[in-house]
Length: 315
Figure 1 (cartoon, rainbow, N blue to C red):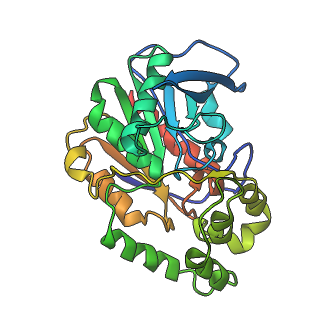
Figure 2 (tube, rainbow, N blue to C red; figure 1 turned 120 degrees about the vertical axis):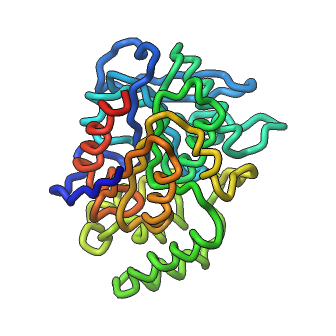
């Protein structure tokens, strides 16, 4: 089932740059608290501290950010979602206040999905919803494949079940659609001309290529640039265990799923997001118009409305 959402009046509201979650577990909700107060938690996984943050009320949704290596706060969702969901934001290992992966634990989706399950268990929940954005989508897919018994539902946001040359070709096509923008040459050169990110701190490469992440950087730069400049990054090891095509395994995922993304997403072009939804037996596909890789920032009202509308069907 696919739906296109028109653009709403654009407002950043209480949103920070980042990824979102939607949820409705079969188990009990976490303990009640003020839905607008962020509560910090720590769980020890493989002998290392993992920090996560809980805000909102209602069904629990564990949120896995992208990167890998971006600070969790880029993924803080529109405030109205906190009235419908208990959002559980993970600080991935090696970022923020979370400890690095222990020696002998390889970076990748397997390690990250184990931490999602540790957070679920620490909350005392039998079942949770999991939302993954960008790279976090691959982690969420792997969790859905390996932990079906604990998955109440799945939100795949700005991601694709397919990697490789076919996806890369479409990325270049989206990049080319920006060729007439005044910032294009500088941003395009930065894609290939900057070195690696520092161990932690600012994000020079991401800052330089940020215009590609939005549908209309040219006219919204004044509002968007401060958020980009505030981002923090960590130079983490690249995942070693990602699949080139998750679709065969996703065919066995029976949990209700929402696949949602921006029409002009350059990292994961919308055709590949649609192909991801087509691979899942119980998927709803939503396109947020006039957005790029971060619809919850560009069209927060439409993004939140799509998740809230999906929740009754998911429960």
